[in-house]
Amino acid sequence: MATTPPEEKPVESTAAPRNAVDRFFKISERGSTIGTEVRGGLVTFFTMSYIIVLNPLILGFVPDGTGQFLGGGTGDGSNLPLIAAATALVAGVLSILMGLVANFPLALAAGLGLNAVVAFTIASLEDVSWADAMGIVVLEGLIILVLVLTGFRTAVFRAVPRELKTAIGVGIGLFIALIGFVNAGFVRQGGGTPLELGIGGSLAGWPSLVFVVGLVLAIVLMVRRVRGGLLIAVVATTVVAVVVEAIASVGGSGEENPTGWHQNVPALPDAVASVPDLSLLGQFSLFGAVGKIGLLAVALLVFAILLADFFDTMGTMVAVGSEAGLLDESGNPPRSKQILMVDSLGAVAGGMGSVSSNTAYVESTSGVAEGARTGLASVVTGVAFLLSTFLSPLVAMVPSEAAAPVLVVVGFLMVTQVAGLDWKSPEIAIPAFLTLALMPFTYSITVGIGAGFIAFVVIKIAVGKVRQVHPLMWVAAAAFVLYFVLGPIQDAVIPGAGG
Image (cartoon, rainbow, N blue to C red; front, side, top):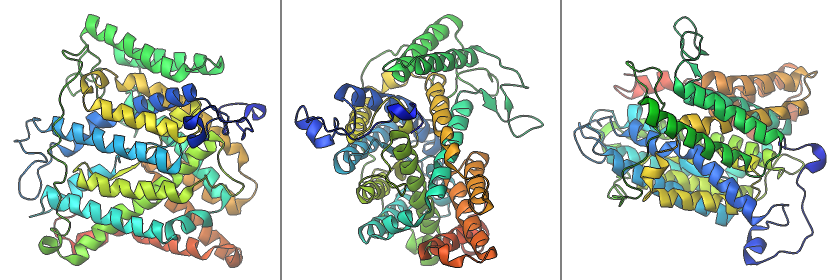
């Protein structure tokens, strides 16, 4: 764990449980308290809540292969509240399930990247409807669930060398720090460079100032070890943002207003609560796509999202477990099978809820940095998501500029694990470097893991240490080779997939 000095690292306590909740979640045993778990769960929710707004924006404006929009409408945004309500509901149920079944501080929601694949690669295929696309997501989830129940997914996870698991945690730290900077507009796509500071290499606009204030506040509260510091930083920065918007009328970011707020505009809502419309639930067709694009094409699409789902969560649970000090000697978190089982159900539930595959969120590390160590934090996050189906106007008050500072701070804490890697041994240092570098560079956890796996196997072959490669690592590396060239294969098999 990187959040506290070694002497303060949480260890299992022999203190007697104080009540039934403490006993069920092993709160005292893991050196935590109910108050700490509640704060951690709320911090995780606030750093994840952007998905309630972002998922509808990704799914809601793309017509399917029949010209229809998810949830109906004409592409005018009238369908977005339906998608937002379903997104929050599914995330809430799954996060609560993770807490109760796996007792692990890991929350779930619609997966970014995966939702874009569903919208722009699957649903947009000729004759394919949104219901067909969500059916493919359900199929993928059912297959992963079978792999978990048979022990295969857990076995693959345990076959990964501990050093690579450490590198995965470091890479995710860099990745979520980049997410924080990008979500706040502090780092943007440049004119002559892939990324640059602000606009034209300079910071401009009130939102950038709010982010900097929030980042400084989060850092100060962290180094001073203020209890609830990260949650305080999110709330305080949101208040500042609301005041700034009320005075300056900054507005949302766009081509004509590049210095506006990213994602949410922090304004006081007209109403505190609203009644959610959950009519999207159950709108899926399990095998509808097979008759339209063929079995082979469906199989390739399922494989594409399956591999991302399969390994993304492995990396995330290592990162969360490492940050919480919950990993065993081999780098495995407790109740790994239960964690992976709930995550597999995330794809099934996401497809059934018409909100795309749900997966474990690396933002959960923000709650762990706040002190969360048990599944009670996930339950709190889940309850907050359920409440947000009614309190969506309040959730919309929190701009990404207020949540992003927490991601940057947590990214720093996770990167400190890099000291645990042996950089003098090329056999592990090169795969580790590719893993931790390619995650932020490609904006993909899966790509980083795949590059590290392939490099590990290739190097072991080169130095004549083939016997040190676990058989399942061979399988995983071969699967990633196929994954990296899947685009051309899909273009050849599925008409219109590349376009």
